[in-house]
Length: 495
Image (cartoon, rainbow, N blue to C red; front, side, top):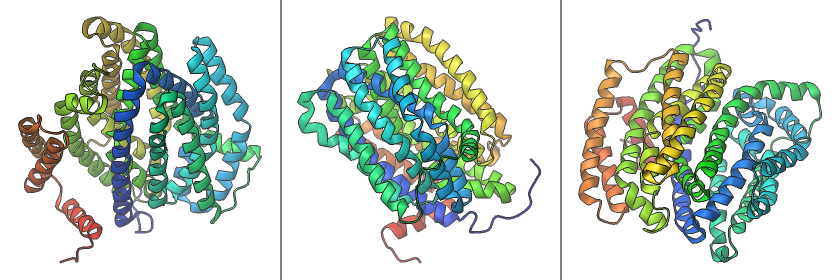
């Protein structure tokens, strides 16, 4: 790509707007993380590994088919609407029209998959409801994509919170079994769809459009996103299928819960990515120098932030597991979580780099790599799952180790593809200082790990934050932005 010397205007990329939205998404992700922790600590413990394994298998199958039939349209919608808001009505209407034709295909493929994989009666029962949930999601998710493109952080965060709150309402009815979770999933999608539709309808008219030229644009633009999303979904499906074949349904339940818990640890790159993508889509067109500079800064920041999260999971995996599931259920969860902790830093890096590749319209090369990586993951998991099942009595450990290896490969390839290595002398010095702060955090957590879980977590993060501030892990500009956000949050006057 030819070098563009134009400077991005504040309208194209506003640091204050991105920082504000990132803060909203961040605190929203923290709140939903806490809700998820409560959900994970009560529902799986009450229903058990087998029931959670059946739900995970049915949900993963249906959502994998749904991901296939999205054709990558949601991500394409966010990027294009972020670049030009005037395209919102046209693209959203076209996507709605296209998906109306895909509903029968969603049900057909899901049922055929259940049949081929010889699903049991409970899985079939769950599947009927989860297909309904996935149909609603086909229309609810594009609405969220538009709100992301519009950078409406408050509305997105509010409804994301509602979505994760609804399963808590099933707690009094858990005696009816795992079917309660499928019903909650349907209700969650229906409620968020209704609110998103009302909000967006105030600004643009939404009418399903049946135009083949428009559909062609959506499909062609969404294909790179489709492959990326499908590969992520497919890796989970392959893991569950291998575990179900080479271990048992209980291993599927353990792995699915660990994967769900691991997903909550990704709240930092998720928040930053959601805030960045619309602005990045504009910045990539007019400010290449600023784009590359921002790329390096974000990558280093995420590496720094990944260290305390990784440390927390590694050191406190056992008390986390015992708090959530008790000492007698999901007994191999601590070891599984510790293995998953090894994937946190590479996952943070890959998540951020993917956003930059998308903004530069370079997702095609990345998707080809992902297809190859799924093959590598499947091969590794096929050998590691029976090995760890035999050696450690946990096939889930093998599935997670395969994930760690594939994520490390993804980091190496992404750096090669971006051709922008941020690891110079200055950034390595920052990472070293962050590592020193992390060691201080480890010491505090070790000294307090026998206390109630929140005490070592809070003290550990306070230790990391103080040491990172004293050691100047953040740049002066980043420290100023953090200070400004804290002052704004607590309505403190500027000095």
